[in-house]
Image (cartoon, rainbow, N blue to C red; front, side, top):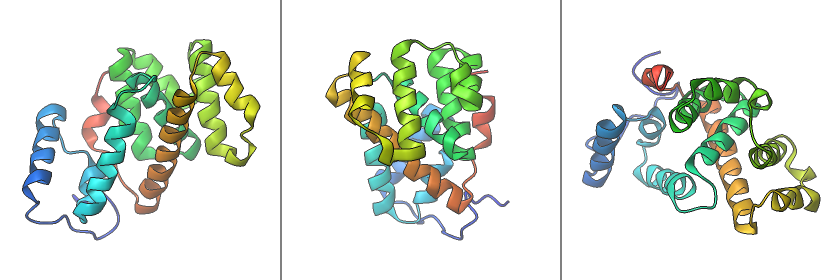
Length: 188
């Protein structure tokens, strides 16, 4: 594999627009890298902006879900889909946000082996079912989340995060997107 983040020949816009370059510079400063998913989308700035806008809204904006819970959803969805890129990147995020490398590894390998509370278990079970068999979601599934204290807005956020990662997993698999090597050593 070359320096390309995917198996596709989609060269990054060069030069990047100033706002995009600033965003990439912030990533480099904060993360020590520009995530390959961003480099992948940089062949089309409108697509990159749409991707980052939705990602930032779902993963970073105010929500009844913590950032860790949203990352846990990303890992469970990616585990069902066997998405190497997202398991690597978001497994690292779970390790970092939880300050628990064992939890991060358990989430990647088999989230049901992790010592999770009833709220997290209900949330992740819903995300897993939504990923594996979305047509079988019924009112009882939503009620189980309500019974664990999730609001209807929270349920919408759980579904939206799960749906987003189902989409990104498929793009990553279809393009053979590779995670940045730096992810492998983070928060261990």
